[in-house]
Image (cartoon, rainbow, N blue to C red; front, side, top):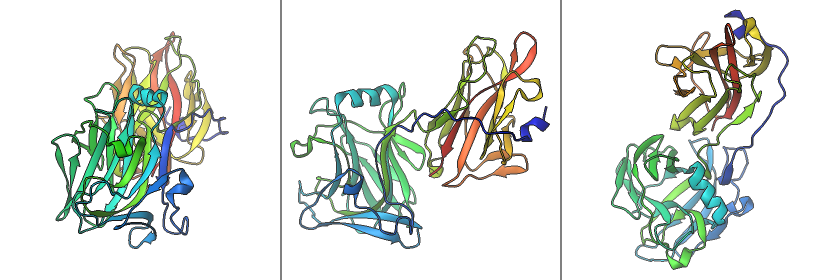
Length: 373
């Protein structure tokens, strides 16, 4: 049975589901593009005033990235921010964000010398109270302090002034504890909703400097608002039917940012109380009914396949018919040892599980593909 895992046959036709990214700004990497794009070219608006500036940085030397720099020196000047903005979404979109979960991520390099002037924010627009969620970022020696604008939370982002880009996010997971603040993949605490300023009650998403009167300077490489449950492309779908009468399905949630180390795989519609493992590969392929299986292996091609079969990775489908696995991008098993994933790579996953249909056999879920950032 082992040998088929390293076989390669013709590619299977993809059945894709588009990434559900609602809005994004991307400055790119050094040299690609040559000049960081103005956010207006990607559908954003700009708000600036005296004492503020917005400038493309191409590249941000020593980081390998381009950036959009925001500087605000208006100390005490309430209502004179320097923001990159998107209009409020329709209620149907905001309802779906609450129903599916959301994540607003800002990839930022904080510059020294400011107070709590740098921020990023999302508002749902349903009412003028308790609907804007905003994080203010403040230099604090070698660290950054993140302030919950509406609440009392202050969170230490350790080492964030090290000259590198870091990931700051506001995340809402359906069924979770509410809106959360996340730094480099670690949840640090909650984010509260607050009243919208009448000056900006039509703004749905913004990043830059705030209207709090604080000063600050920062370089933004990437900002995106997306559905929290949709980070992958599904292919090889539907999978072969199993003993439940259904096809097993695989979903991926979390983040495609390598630094976040947040990825959860979930296989569902499995037969109850059966063992399953997850497989990974940088390639896609098609092996029909390998080793007598009733399903199809959809990984491989010219790439090796790794098995998540270490003791802490095995799973039983239990009574719910589901298996989950948290994936660490720095600890991916491969046939020749551990693998470390890097930005720009595409990784594919599939679940391989036992079944009784009617005799002992195995089967596969459909597969998912993710391109890392």
